[in-house]
Image (tube, rainbow, N blue to C red; front, top):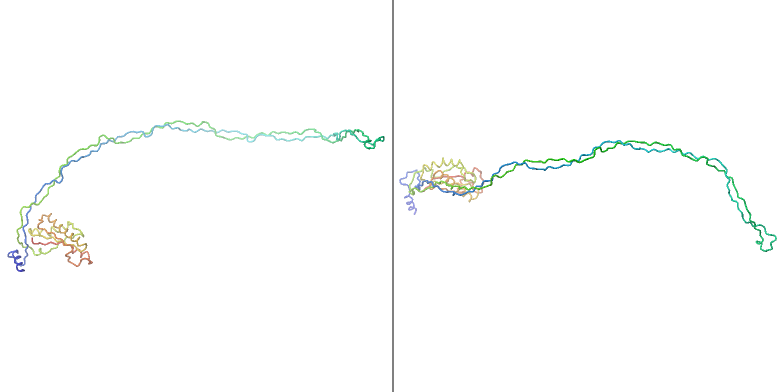
Length: 358
């Protein structure tokens, strides 16, 4: 079985190889030519434009306060007046003069004359046994009694001597109205202001415009000649092994920088120019940081970014292979759980290339 398998492989190997040289099997690629095609990317359509109303600035004089009448009170005018008043009323000083008397004698009846019955002795000739029957009654009169009394007779009655005292006067000053207060009427003129206003001179309107369709020209590949013929070509043996493509990828990024594109131009484009029918593998790797799934996806995107750039540079896509290996092919000790420096991790973030058989 082993010999039979080798025989089959040997039949497909280059004829008359030279020792120490390397060969790569090349399949003639399909030949495509670029064809420019005009396609409509946006149909024609109608737009309606609105034209705003037109306005004109105008100024007007407007009444902001009407004319009014204002009543003004003119206060009274005052003057001074000196008033004389009686500070102290006039009076009199009264000097009494005592009455004068003279001595005299006056006879005063101290007991008037009178008469009375008086019982006398018994009548000796009375025959009655009752003694009272024999009494003699006589009506006897008595003269008045007088007494001499020293008296004073008024010689000159008391009088009052009156001496008049003149009244005292003083003055005070008071304010007096010389002109009464009054109310006068004043006219306060109206007030006006100038205002600016926008007056519409043309109403808003719409116009219709037809926007033409938009076209773009794209280039598409059209198969001109079918490939598929196989031949062996001598290549530099080093190109059969992985060669470093020194692109410094930013962490978690798959975007080619201008520096990376320059490296591809100087490193890969000459290889492809010298081996126009050989197939090229782009292999990209990540470090161990992150999950296996995310690293696998990141490495595939990095490899595809290089392939996309080569296609932009005119390399046939059938000659390019993009492979991402994630963190499966670390070239140092920095696997999951191992503490490493950034420099050590960066060694694993690499992109490589090699020529492979079609």
